[in-house]
Length: 442
Image (cartoon, rainbow, N blue to C red):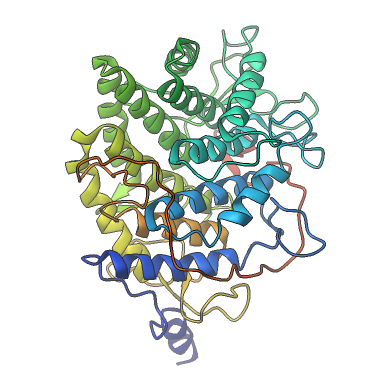
């Protein structure tokens, strides 16, 4: 009886996020509730804390992902409640060289960590997010600086190219070249090319993609595998994560949009099919490497948000994919909203009954008891992905394009305070054992 009552409490929907997906106003209201709960985890805007850091157990890269999700939220809804905290956090973490290598992270961050922050900056540049003051680095410049760093680290001495997972030799994982690091480099290069039409970026994107194929990390069936060991360049970890697949899909769609090349269209089609085969089960996104066996780490529990945003951007950049992608996004948005019905006894400071769970699978997709930044981010991105037109006048691939360039306006709201203490992340949280190899994903 006690167990049954406990389960009923976990799945309670008294304060659940209830969304009418035929109404943009309802979608925005639901997203606002989820965003409020998400920002209760963030304390970087509190006195004595460091902007751009999340408290334990979150690693530094995840704050970069958080800001990307908040930029996407602003673009889709027009709610600018969290714009100031996003700008503050991004600019605080740029470091002395304006390349997202701040002193509090430099010794431990990996190439993928730095790249994820660069993707937040380029998302700001793409969306017309309010620019920093003239005496501060601009969004696109920050992205370019990271791109230049990654170019310098391209390693032809081992495995004929590719980025290593780690930047420095003294960090565990330096002997791996992983798809996450090369994926952020690829996505960054592709999107910079789309913005600038500078062929340097498209040349590098092509080189990275070809290397991934040659290294066996993108297979003939368009599966994106985790990593290759640099010791012999043959020992491949065949783990698949939605993060890596998302990065290569998004970048390929950007290059297709910029070039209308049949080669990039073929890659978009193949990667989209690969995503569906690997990460969609009965219409619902599943983190295939860990979700069904309940072994997903804190890092892995944040990857679905990348998948959602990548699919939404792909539908916009390659509009012919919209007929395939939009129904998937709607199905998952509905499931994610249903899963935002938790009232955990601790760890969640949002509105009671609106904590978002990790798993959206199952006939009821109720709250599964897992809470955190990743879970809230995933659900937020899923819900706003269904909005028919964003606040900037851009589209998600289902409605005609309209001129952009005006600043959105939205309802005023008080940015909620977070809780906890900051962490100096070293980018090694997601540990998997596969084929006798023990290492982290990020």
